[in-house]
Length: 99
Image 1 (cartoon, rainbow, N blue to C red):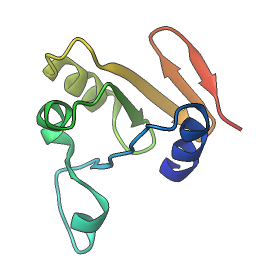
Image 2 (cartoon, helix red, strand yellow):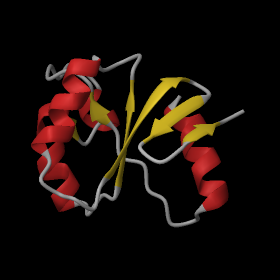
Image 3 (cartoon, helix red, strand yellow):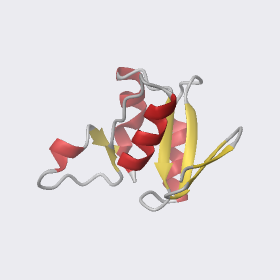
Image 4 (cartoon, rainbow, N blue to C red):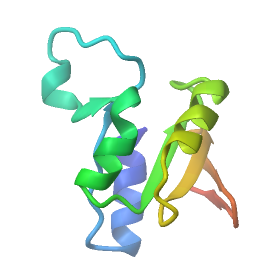
């Protein structure tokens, strides 16, 4: 999923960087190589990496946790989106379809 979205977004904007967070707060095995942090660290990671857009996967993160993380971030310059499946991303302003 992440690779597909990454490719589609990079076609539109060449300066996009994808940072992956662990959806739960348990780190095992090779996780340190795949993820830059855990979901509960999202507000700090947004500030450290100057992130302007966060896309949550509804397959991996519960809606309750998504809303909680959105409320915890005090950064008003971050756009939050939710991926409902591998082809549809919903934001506050629009719905994007990736094929």
